[in-house]
Image (tube, rainbow, N blue to C red; front, top):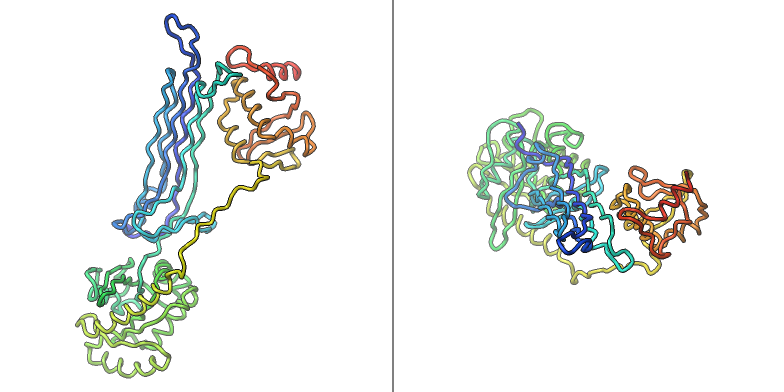
Length: 456
């Protein structure tokens, strides 16, 4: 059974807003005392939060579908519906949120960092909130908005300063254990390490994290072995340390060839050429290992590499190596500090932004905009008065005038919203807004009745 997961597809559904209530106060000696319908409650959000105690995305591998609760509907007596609780999903530091197409939505680094991945729908207004001098007793309420639904990919990239890379059984996990308090699984067979292991190392005043990247073999960048699954954990590291096995018994292998093979895989993966390299010639506690290390060290130094002869098992040569790591890490951190304070850029809304646009299509005229689409979702189309209220709002926004300018004629097909969830109707410009009271009995609108009679 999987115990470490660093990439999952997550399906999240925020809660729907509760519907508003259409109610009229009825008490003794107060017949028709006025509208008293309460507002609906807000639906719950789905939020990601970085938690340092979480190290894997395994929880979402077993449960990829997450849904927040819906808000409660409003009630009579001016009682608003209860807001739903948000759900908070704990993720490890270094989690990236991607769209299904690979676009980066958020990069979550740092304990406590939060990101709302799906927002709950707003609750609908009750008729008490909709009352006005012109509409004293509305016979309708607004529906709650649906919550966001999103499919996202969560990808974990370990947040470490130094990455240890090398062939299986080169001693990377042993080195992490020798230099830090981490205790990874260590055994004498390949692919013992199935997850990236992180350890905290102290060298003088410098404190940094080290991660070993398991499973790198020839062809890892193409999917062989386990390397492709874990190469992404190298991306955030500022220093690469090649751990080379100087005591391998495999025929045809030596430290120089191992280094060249791993470098080819890193180059094929891409984006790592700018990382400084250190070479750790491991297992010099073995007599043949020390001899081989002495032979290859001059060759590696000719390539401009810092070379350290170490033994993770005997804890030999680790102090100079740790200080060399610390120097490069501190240099990288210093380079990452901006020269000046970050500026906050505020982009104001354009003065000619009317909040919607009219698109001319083969089927008719499509209205796109956050406000008109939201208003349509909140409208109860079984209530003529609610439809008339929607007409008032759209006309005040300027949609009637915009349709005239776009060349729309009576009876033209008008669509509000996207192709998947648009509301389609035949445009009747004779049903104008703001021309005096249109209310009849509760829940009716004279304009809608006139239009329906005319169509009949």
